[in-house]
Structures are given as structure tokens and as C-alpha cells.
Length: 452
Picture 1: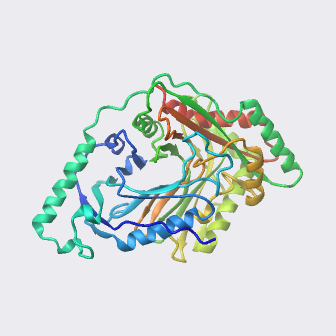
Picture 2: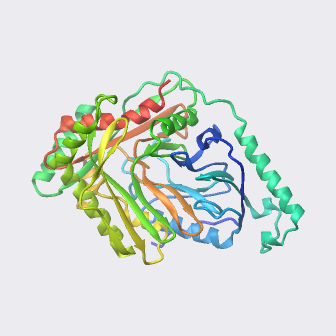
Picture 3: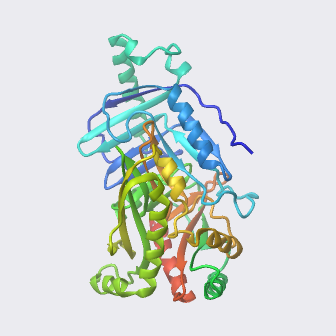
């Protein structure tokens, strides 16, 4: 079956430099915020100038084809020329080709999506910009007539309108703390999940798989619709070195960069191997040393590095991976981490690279196909967008895609409800009780982000 063809509107896009409007995450609106921010840099947005929703095995190909058509028909004036300026889209993709459990009345199972914001604000270093995107008939431009052909007064009026539109979006009340939010196991209890880990260990002992990543979910319902800005601001403050993201009600702060493509340079950060921080105020060096010496965690990390390099190698002229990982320290856990870099060689976009790499051994297992079958058999839930690619894509094909971790989906049918996710890599030396504790530690960022 051929991939579906999704219609693409004709857009007019304009980026202008602006002064510092304040922290990016403070600019977000209550409704449908869009975010990709790390250490105060990145982009936020709101509104939708264009959108495509895809699902199934061809979801990456269909989204990529739609994006190519959209870019080919767009008129773009970019006065800033930074990564993320001009025509760009925020994106989120389902982990699996098809959901393993039906939606029913659960609005937390959502399709894969690319969304072009109507208004976006970005920052790189000391450079700030504002971008608007409008459908051609809304922009008032004649089809095929470049923006450069407009007269100077029209350009100035357009810039003033952009700034007024954005400033209207910034004049918002402070985010509201959630009321009555109580967390509970969702698809299975902790005991049932440990049983699934035990079954995975049987598969590993039998040689069916070498590693399988199993996830679980928790859910909560507040007294009133959740304000995503509350959690996003707290995540940005608590985890500044992570990428704080929000797309279509799916939000979180991921420490793992699936792939970045910028001017031909490819970069990825792999995380696999984790140890909890029972006391955030205590020295981390004893924990870091224990993590470095852990044969179980080192083996888990080696699987992940190998799978990433094998997936990227066909697309890169040169690829470098470190001989040993470093320890990444976060407020709740420590991870073994490795940065992989290379040079793009085949014209792939960042979305193409994300599709080639996903799912890595860090979120699926080894061998990939056998591990995916084990997840399908043992995991009593749909992952939906959890552990899928999340990030942004530019008209040039450059972009950044993270692995959607430390995250949750606000229910589109009942915005008082949210489902959060956490997983752990199971290898031969894993113990069910320890793996359950690891998932509890990985739930902590989202639980604390929604705390009052």
C-alpha cells in the first residue's frame, strides 16, 4: 500500500529580529503551547498555521512528504538566519507503527503530528526572533508573488502586526497550580509490572533477546483542566540541561537527544544505564563510581551505542563514538551517557535520520525486532508517543529530535486527566525490584513538575 498523501497549504512565513522578551517558557499561552527549550535557548510557539496527523508504519514517510510539499510552496522571508528561524515545525511521533491497545475513550493515545506554529519566538545566544506563518489567502499575498516584491510600508506594517500579535500572546495570567492531582498506577500495578520483568528475564535467559525495555504508566485527574505552563516552567527550572518540550498536549523534559542535524553535522546523545539519587543533596561521586563499575549498566549502554551507530552509519560519511561513556548527573538520577557525532552524507533530513535511528536499543532492546515483539507481548499498555521522536524540523531539513522521556500526555477529551510514563532496560543481570525502583525514579520529574 502506498503512503497516504496529505494536502499541504500554501504559507507565507516571516522572521524578524526582536529584543529580549523574557524567558521563553514564560511566553507560552494556556492553550496548546509548543516548546523545545534547553538552558533558556530554543523555540516556543502557539497557534497552528499548518498541521499534519499521521499514524501507522508509513508515518515518518508521510510526514516527510507532506513537509517537502509544504516547504516547496511556501514563501519565506527570514531576516535572522539562525537554526529554527523561517519555516519550521514542531513534531511528535508515536513509538510504534500502530497502537497495541485501542483508544477507547482515552484521549491520551494521539497520532504522530507535525505542527507549524502561527507564531513562534526563539533565542540563540543573544539573538532573539519572532516568526509568523499564515495561509496565503490570510497573508494577503498574491499566489507566486515573493514577499520581497511588497513595498516597504507594507513590510513595516506587517512587522508591527507580528509584534502586536505576539505581545498579545504574552499578556497572560500566571499559570495555575493543579488542584487535587493524585497519582495511581494505570495499565498495571507495580507487582504486575515486576512479573512482566521476570518474564522478560526468561526470554533473555533463553536467548530470544539480549535486552528489552519495559515501560509502565501512571495517571491522575485534577479538579479542573490542567495548565501545561505550570509543569513546563517547573521542568525548565528543575531540569535546565534537558530539552523541555510540548507538542499537542504531550510534554516533558528529556535528557536524551536522538539526533541533531545542523549544516551537515550529525550529533546524538545516548543514555542507557541508570542509578537513583536517594539524597539529591549528597555527593554524587560514590554513585557515579558505582555506575561506572556496574557491568550490568555498562552492558546495557554498549547495546544502545552499537544500535545507534549501526543505524546512523549508512547516512554518514564519518561517525565517531567514544570508547567509554561519561556520567550525566540529573536531580533524580545519574545516567551513563555517550555523545556520537558524524557528517551527513546522503541528503537525509533530520526527520529521515530520526526515522532511521528510532527505536534505539535504549528504548526498545536488542535485537530490535525481537525486543519489539517482547514489548508487545509483555507491556500491558499503548506507549502512544512515549519514547518516540519529539522535536523540530526546519525547511532546510535541519532540526533536533529527542527521545520522548520523562513525559506525559494530557487527555485531549478530558484536559483534567494526564498519563505519565517511565521505563527501564532489562538485561541478564536485572532484578525486578530494582527495575521497578528505577521507573519510580524516572516518574519523579513529572510528578514533581505538577506538584504545588
